Image: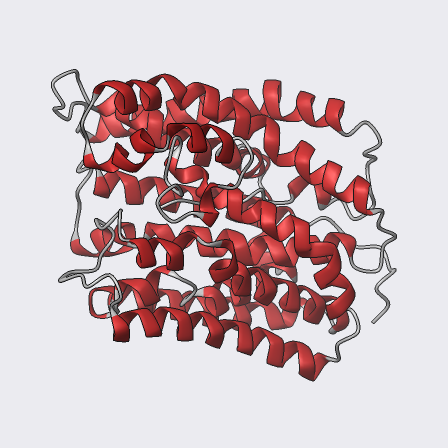
Length: 388
């Protein structure tokens, strides 16, 4: 297939970003004991951290869709990426700074112990998007922002990975996608077998284990998910893009996701957290990129706006969640369904305002050469996100 051909917008993938970010939000609802529910909901919410894996796969796919076969000037590409992610990232650091520094300087909470002992290093690493490289620092300042540190590494490598993958045949791309998935399974499986942190229980409540944090947050450990997304992006561009294939592809991804949710309590946490579901996410992304007619609901303007604002939603929700649901004595308030609904609507409104008045103006100012493209995907590129 011709990689220089015009490519339509993929608005459904923007809406998917919102759905994935919302999955992260309900994970924190459950983790912070704010919202319970029936068994199926608790299983779904308990693995909301997999939203990060979804964003990494989606990022690789969308960047290939946007840039493959197009002229690329490295300086302009990296400037565009910086303009896309950094303004909202800095805003989130400013927004969360008062609580973080208050906690580090005045409170003796184990979670902040490493940051307290290495505060100068944190002040250097977090604004520089380097925190994910140090396992103990990954969750410092704004904990969910570790994924942006990982994304920054992906953006650094992307032009070179693009040159490598563009020369690969379709069978080779399938092998690269499969090999990427197996590589992550090998890493997480090795952790389960070796248990290098000597933990009696390994779950989402374990936050300070060195090797577990390295597996979850280190950019090299998460690179295969991005590479899998890139390989799928090339497969998509080089294949016959007929919508009749969309339904079985999306359905297979959803079924795989549902099966993992159903048996999540039996799957070791490190394997579940890190890329087990990346092929399922790739199938959903690939299928919806084919734009089946039944997927038109994902092209609703309100959903697309929510998708555009999902980056800010991801970066800010956990801090605002704590402010909204916890009083000064540490008790949970607003636990009613109405209270949760008000929070979600409030969070969406704040995210849309940040997108409209901070993200987009800063992006235009930092990247003045950015032009509207026929492909139209650049404006939707997920900044990645996710958390847990």
